[in-house]
Length: 297
Image (tube, rainbow, N blue to C red; front, side):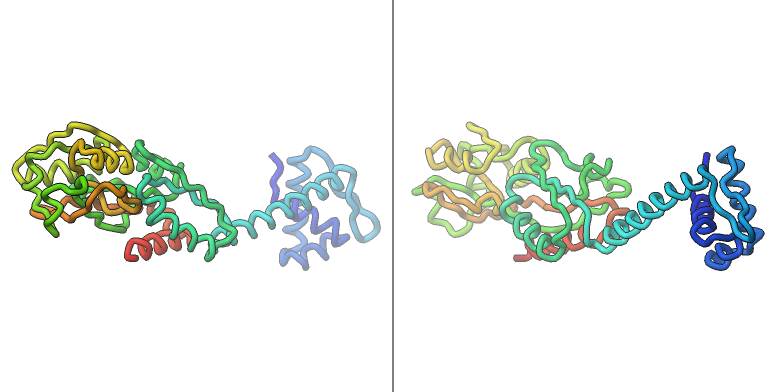
């Protein structure tokens, strides 16, 4: 195995024309330079320098290694520059996992701001529904995931979760429903209604089920949809009532009425999940800040 550092010493000797001059340029003693070249010749199994008067010149093998040392040196310099840019957040790639309802709300404005602040960073947003994106973050396949978590969920080692938003569920009623005259609806008043499911099984459905249990009933789902537009369409058609989170109501069906609910109010809590080790990346920190500001807005 040829030592790359010794190749650079050889390159200094060849370009300087003598061991003494190379030693002065490198800050070594001539003896140390000679030892490095001798060790490199042993590794290469062939002579690399030959004496000419008071100086030295490279053999064919010496010229070959000097040429490759220059190439390696250039590549190392480019790598150091690229690494410095990455540390400073000037370049790089961020892979983001998100679920549908935060795409046009939280994520779009946050990514637009990130692009303005870090124009050379490539952004790769991917929809994670219905999969849990946390394993992608843990395994390094995603830099950030927007997730719904409960306070009782187990903390994952090496993962930082940053609170973004408490997204309250709203009652979605057919236009003209008797309860639509109320400004706020008690959850218990929906106990006898047929329900349209708006969430798949998992962390977004659990707040609804838990809140209904606290109000003393289990919802009777007569129809189910895993997208909010279809759920609103079912409600407008008179199939039942539904609970849909506020972020999921950015586009509203003209045939429904929206009302807040209480006693208790179902809420899903949204977080940004990242690896602890990645938090020193300026672009990633900037994305988290942008998401937090978008959530406040």
